[in-house]
Amino acid sequence: MQLEFVPVEEFYFALTLAVRTLEDIATPSLVEQVKAKLTQKFGQPSTVAAASQNSFNYVFRVKDYDYSPAPQLMISIADWQGGLRLSSDYGWMLDEERKPVRTERFEQRSAFSQEVRSYLGDWLDVPLLKSDL
Image 1: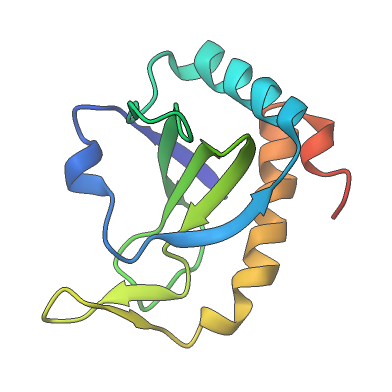
Image 2: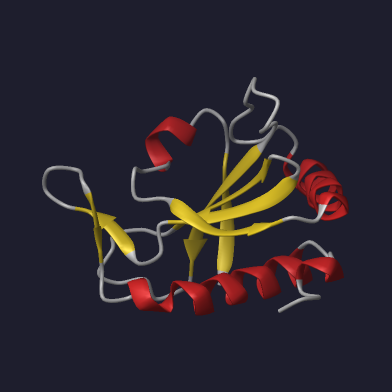
């Protein structure tokens, strides 16, 4: 797995309606650690929300990972109501009418979420991300 950052200029075109929450992690200290690491690596987030329940969202294209039959795979890392929210379109894709439909990989979302947490824990050097897997 390899992540490619989606800057704010490309955000609207990159994120699809198929992106759904993978996991909410209710650890406030984790939010600050992850936000600091992402800000250090990438600067401005892909989106900045004006709402109090959400202040950042970093979006990434996933490379070197099998997500067929979907044409691409996205991951979103955001704060949400004091916790960390991981989202992805893994197991979903848009049909011809641009409506989200499940793929055969939908049942593997939980395992994918654990892979994402483990990868992010190593990549961002935030052991707390991996602590309760």
